[in-house]
Every structure is written in C-alpha cells, then in structure tokens.
Image 1 (cartoon, one colour):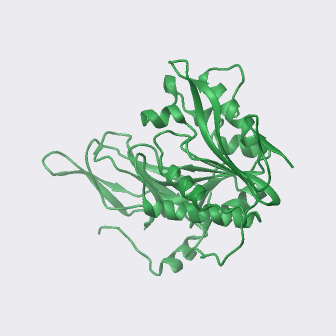
Image 2: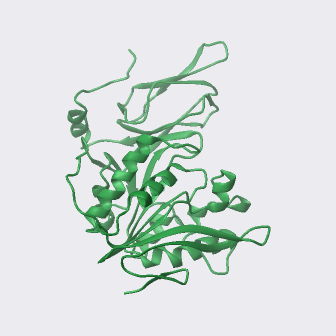
Image 3: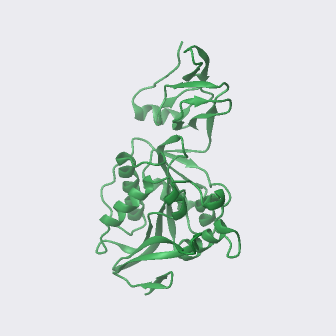
Length: 333
C-alpha cells in the first residue's frame, strides 16, 4: 500500500525525509517544513507528532529529534509522520508568530485562498493531519512562563481520552482548545489529537525531553504501533476540568515561593509583591486548591500580570495528597 505526502510516495518498510512547501518568503524562495515519514513493515494506524507550531517553543524539537533518531522500522507498525519544526519563519526568527504577527495555532484548518497564516495552515492540515488517525502536538509555556509537564485535550472524546491517559502525565487538563487550534480542529474532523505542555520557550530541558519522549512512545504502544513494554505508572493521574491564573493586584517586584508541581490550598500565600525599598506591597493569596501547572518567570508585575496557573482539585484532592505522601501547606500564619 502506497502512502504519499507532498507528492512523494513512501512504501512500507521505508523512511523518507520530505520538505513540504507551505509558503514563500520575501525573497521569493520556498518555505519548506521538514517532515520525516516512517512506514513500518507491518500495517497499522497513521499518526503525527509535531513541534514548534509556535516558533519559539523549541523543546518539542528536541523530543522529535530523539524520536527520529531512535525509530526502528523493524519494530514499527503503521506510519508515523514526525515534524520537528512546523513554524519555520517563527523558528528562524525565534518568534511565536508567523509574519504579520499571526499565530499559526489559531488558523487551522486553514483556507486555500486566505491570508498567509490560513494558507500555511491549510497546506499543513491537508497534507499531514487529514491523512492521520491521531496526533500529538508538542508545546511549551508562552514566553516568560514555565509549565509543569502535562497533557491537554478534549476528554469528552473517547479516543482523545485514550491517548491522554496513555501518555502518562500526572495532570490531564480537560480542554478542547480554542477555535482554530490544531488539537481542536483535528479532533473535530476525526483525528483525535492531544497537546503536551512542558517547560519554557527558547531552551531545551533534558528532563522535559525525557518525559515528552517517553509519553510519545507510550502513545505509540497504546495504538499498537510500537511494542508494549512495562510502563512506569505515574504517582497519580488526575483529569482537571478547571484551571485559573492568579493575577497580580499591584505593581512591583515579585517574590514567588511556589513552583510547578506544588500542591497548594485555598488561602495559601504563593508569594509577595515588593516595592523597590523591599517593603511588602501585598501578599498573593491563592483563591483555590490545586496543583501549580505554570508560573511566570518575570520578576516584575503590574496589575493583571498572570503569576500562578492552578489546576483546580476537588474530588481528586485526597488521591493527590496520598500520592505525594503529605499534605503540604504554604500558608503563612
């Protein structure tokens, strides 16, 4: 059975490196996305793993690089499409965006005759996503923030739930994604897709890469594309339906005392905002009980600055407490 991408045929038991044209530059040259297609020697599903849809979120690039390096066609069933860098213009500029400050992850499935981002998304969606049975989209936090490794997806979709649980992260955030995002539009069109969030922009983290790569292998095994091995069970796994950012009420210098992965309780003090003389302007009180899944890395605040991202815990709180082995409170009395 023949599989084609960008007009190039890939046979079973074959690997092809393909440059998929998605746009053109200001110099009239082609903008081409590097794609590696692996076709196992045995039949099976087709899946994609993509990184750097936001050009400055580069840790996923390292995950896909390692995936490509470690792939063995003798062990693979089905077809895997690996895209280490989707947003080539943003990656080269180390920017989240495409030209004209457009976010590629807001314009899927795209439009053949639309503006530059819509045309880019259309070509990517038609040539890659629509040919797949499932997908994994690798991201980091936005600039100036860092995230706990976790998975996001529409948990009302049974196949998304299967992928998300198989990935193996402790926290799964039940979010379908905003309109135009890859995971939402792919899932809505019959290609269940999850998103992995971890780390921060502009850098590689060996810890994040290890977690992300293991998660991808777990999903491939769950989809019967890769031999199943003894999976390391996370200390706990919770599905979170609500999350919220704690925002600064005052401007000043931020003294934060929580980190991603911390369990915090309503009323705890997550840090303080100081004036230039070192005096406390206000203390940052936590409005809900949950796990910290993201924090700002910026040392300065103005009113409204997002500081701490909390995944709310209710029914699963006792499970998390037992798994962590202690009930930790940051409350300052």
